[in-house]
Length: 98
Image 1: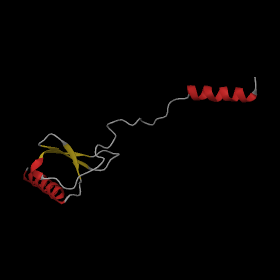
Image 2: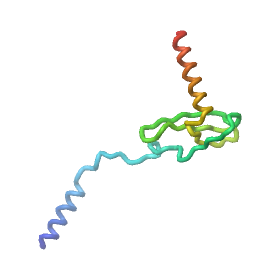
Image 3: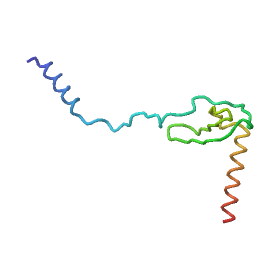
Image 4: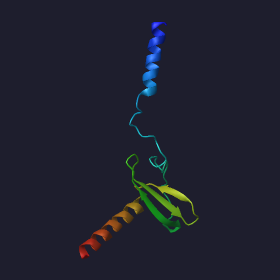
């Protein structure tokens, strides 16, 4: 056998029997749900808000609308910032009263 063929067979055998890397496959859970966001949306059309924060993605706000569509809202939107601020203040007050 030629030395090059023997070396190739050895590398191939090592690659076949070497343990798999510890890297995790990209799953749908780890992907960012919001690829684009909207800045203007009527608050009257929103039925529900969901907040997502995953390690690989920035803070995401998903609004379920009354027409059953879901859109991502820019977290920097002024009314949303005020909404979050009010919600946090309300939580702080309820903890202080307990």
